[in-house]
Image (cartoon, rainbow, N blue to C red):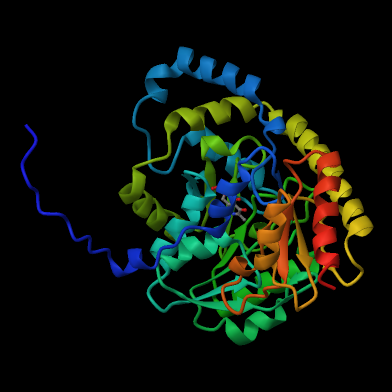
Length: 397
Ligand SMILES: Cc1ncc(COP(=O)(O)O)c(C=O)c1O
């Protein structure tokens, strides 16, 4: 039945597709899969934290009691009881979030893509932190915006700088808690100032918050969403508090935007798997996260401390790094003359990996920066890997 001599296709990719590139991190991850490598490169949560047994019991319960619903097509905006649970959990600090504002997505990465789809035209001004989450830069890039980098300092994004550059922009994308890649958090004062500035400009403020629950010390700071639910679009994810493999996230947006994103999602994938939404609801509905999240915080906090101690012990005095109070990342700044991309080649030869900082910048990359993740490496390996890196850096001083 196979036809003879088909004309070879000259693929004509769209202009949009021609600009697509593989994430540097994904490329590095391929190398770091080798078991001998001590990898500080991945942004993957620790598999030690995955609640495999709870998921197993929940899958079984959902399939045996509601199997016909779970395996059917579902609504685009998501499984109603889960959207209600999310709306309730976010209705704090005097704000009321309605389930109609919640759109379930296939990971919050899809939320970023949908935001880009409905808010960004070619050349639209999009404000991002310096540096910012690489996956967001990738997702927005498809829609060909003009990225404007918002200045930051050791305490994160500087709200005063937004007033001057934010006019006419389509959105500002911010990560207030334990930012990926720097691990920095915004103070309450800066959150308020940022929300006020954006409200004054009529500028939609995206609050991407996959790490907020992973605070090592006390309760997380107030959400910007609750400071202005009409102007802040909140993004949450189950990837870092349950498991990333289920690909479940959500966007909380004012009604008009939520409905537009729902239409965009319908065109993209109809809906996020009903089965996984029902299972996640089954797992969390009776307070499981309240017991589970502290165990993740403890593991990550211990490993973060191990890395901070090793950095102090092995890195030359000219190197600086952030001291995160939650989340998964430490950001390192080397002396200006050291290019972290070149350092990576030498590190891999020594069986250690990290992510160079340059890809996290929308504009003007700082080549002397790098990101370290400590969550999937046990403390003794953290010490060994940091010692090797320290030696390579010291040789360049
Ligand atoms: C800041 C940030 N936003 C979004 C995501 C995407 O998460 P998800 O697994 O929910 O798609 C990540 C993943 O690492 C992230 O770090």
